[in-house]
Length: 321
Image 1: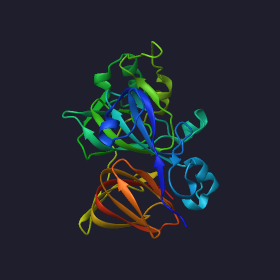
Image 2: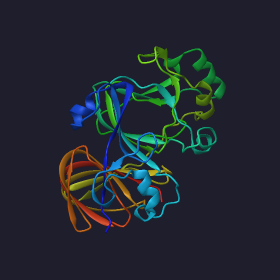
Image 3: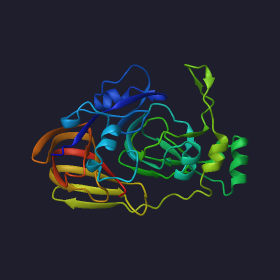
Image 4: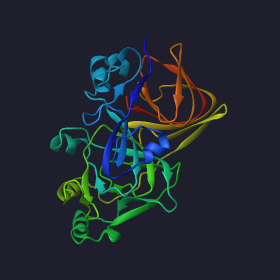
């Protein structure tokens, strides 16, 4: 009988990271500036271990390949999504990600379209998001002249906001922001600008990728027009942030759970879940499981309906069928 797959997070040190993942989620994080929690990952740079049930101790990408029935017999040869929590204790580099075609040719992996649910934002916090250039020549000119204030867009954000970042979008999380990120399973990032920071471990400025950024940036930039919907289900609220056709890769939802909320797979064969606040239970396949802030799991395809009960905020996502 299929069971939910609970996952042990993987943590990554980053030059811009801090210790907030420890205080916000009570994670036992390694020493250093920890910037990323890879919460649901089949990527080779940080695969999650399953911590319950029949597949306890196995890695998610191995189970994905060896038991495709759990994932609706998918066409993708790799687990297609990656869920992270990012703690921007300092600003990330200004960057852009490639689409599938460019990434496959140059990096031999998926492209990287992503989105953010803002967990926390300091007062006055903003994203670097979008650009002003109307042509590739103008983009190159502003980059080479270092006219970043003229080139880069700013987007103020607060807790609860949702931001979609298609491949080709110039962007950066800035200081004082924590997000849950849902993305394609890719670790390809092209740095456009990094504030001339020096990596203390190497003593060198971090590598930039100017040509790749010019190759992959969408010009001109247009902010996505999302159609966010809210559905009242009993005392709970289901928010659909994005789904097809706006996103060709994933659907993302927020479940504000008050009491009992029944769910099923909506736009994909299986469902990823991250508990961002509160606690409660999951009732699935005749079993009850405890849920608490900071837990991450997958509801596999054979479990067609389930209930979450309690007082919780959950971000859920599904791959496109």
